[in-house]
Image (tube, rainbow, N blue to C red; front, side, top):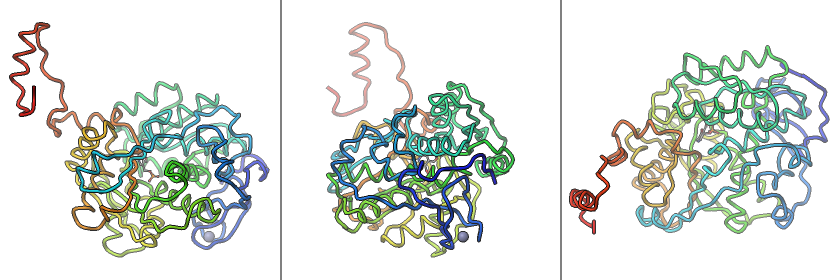
Length: 428
Ligand SMILES: Cc1ncc(COP(=O)(O)O)c(C=O)c1O
Ligand SMILES: [Zn+2]
């Protein structure tokens, strides 16, 4: 295990220790990610100070307004970072009407610096990695994480090394290469890439693989989605939330954020249900949920939702815990349903989300159809990434009308002929 430097726990703000999610054993904050007793995954624990909503609201317009709830140094906002967060919570009335729902919100993560929620987790991982003396920022990635790591490293002036499955979307590859770090395309699935990264993390002592050996710190960054949703609702919790699941960390940490806000007295202790969304071509957590299992059987992914294509999800069992405790579910939808939901989100709310958004909205639709989600209860869905990065999903003609129209001559007559050719009954 890599221990590149002695760490000073006070440099992790109000984070006070690491604890094992399996056996509860505690250890000092530092460059470890597995329990010395049972090899279970470690999580960050806090000794939180009293905190007010006013103090948070007075903070910077990015995730660092929640710095005292993260394992980062108190002066984190002064270090160069991509400053993610404070993305819009969009009230989706047209979409709600279409679905027969009452109040529906979309947490739109496209507004982050590299257009997905991954900028949040990377910013926290980078801050902690710098404190621990790591020299290189690295990751295995399904695409969005590679974008975020390469950009954050460029901004911080450190080297990045990202490992991706070779069959990734072209847009995600270009949006990583532009930042100039080292990109390694691996012939294999994400789970193969992840295994290679774990081996490298053991060997390269000063490489911080954000989601491997720095994972306890990294994962805490997803709490900021939950904090923001509560703040944007006027310091209260939604009744239902639907979250995409790859490794499952985002879902688990949104629940942790809600529970922290309740325990700090910053929001009322109102009940909420957490739902997980997967693509049918990679739905190991949904399958375990349906079967009533506590463990997740790995699968080999095959879906257009490549960002969610993790067949052996590290947080799968904890996702099951959260959804069962809160009365939610994990469900999955087919690739055609994903594309159809991407289009529905775009035409109703002007939001072009990526395939992961199609998975999340598709699952919302499915749960409503099956009577498993209350249409009258206030609901939030996460749009975790940008549709411009997953254009391939639309390029095969799977979605009518997504292709470019045939060009016309620049004359009024040509325009009128074009108009006449439109099939839409409500065209002028
Ligand atoms: C766009 C998008 N949404 C959701 C997720 C799922 O995140 P997690 O691995 O925390 O479940 C990912 C993960 O790569 C992603 O890229
Ligand atoms: Zn343990």
